[in-house]
Amino acid sequence: MANETNKVKGVFDSLKIESEIFEELNKKQPNWWKLFCKDEELYIEIRKDNYINIYYNGGNVAKIVFKKGKFKATIHQKYLGDIKPRGKTQKGKDKFEYDELDLSTIDENKLTLIKTNIRKEYSDQYSDTEKPAEKWLQCKLILKNQNYIDSEFAYNRDEEIPNLRIDLVELENGILSFVELKRIDDGRLLHDEKRNEKDPDIIAQMKSYEKFIFKYEKEIIGYYKKLIELKNDLGLFKQSINFELNKTPKLLIVNTYKVKNTRRENRIEKIKKLLIDNYINYNIVEK
Image 1 (tube, rainbow, N blue to C red):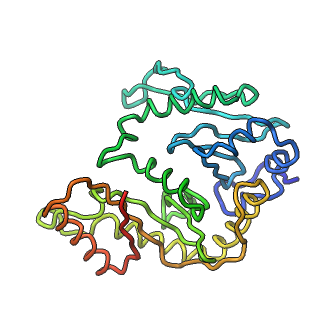
Image 2: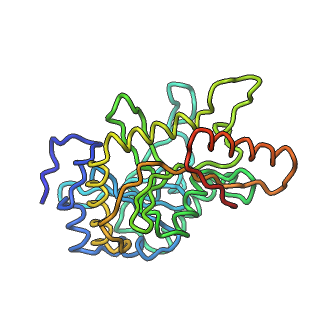
């Protein structure tokens, strides 16, 4: 059993296979855990600091930790149906908080209610439009493709590569790749050349990912071997821990355009040229 006190958080070595939360989940197999695991609309992610996130359509159904011999969970107040603001933020916006979620009360009915509240909160972003939320697209990709073994990988311990967050991690044919997700209409893919001569944000973003991969190759491989082993042990999937790391990050662009016209086709061609000229490994897929 790992000693999880006074440790450095947010680093690769923070993840411990022998952490209590994983040992206790395997040993006790609580009913709420079985419910989460069997629900095909949810996906489950293990995080570096030995906690678990349960997601529905990109909304966090529960953040689960293990403290003082007990599983504890938190959830956004709105997902429990509490839409009343709890004061104001420093910027004057309505303030909402995270509440404790009693895992012992989780059954199919309560889970359905939580899902309904998440859909209500993001109804405009989950609708079948040309501009669905990126996290909604992310969810659909994860549920459809078992090769996506992780999502929202974050690393904030390097001042040269600050606030790094990568949308998807793919393991396919023995190759582990970091994948950035964008909608085709995302302004970061292409600047107005007449107004801004600088490279679009996506170029710097992909270059920073590449720099990160080269700098932390050994640590990334070690971390994902542990994560895969944990997900295998918990029955979340079955993947081999033997893989090679793709040192070139991928860019996945989802074409959400429903109506084609010359202006949009020209935009797509400009994006392609920009990415090719900058040696970006990209793929454009239909929604």
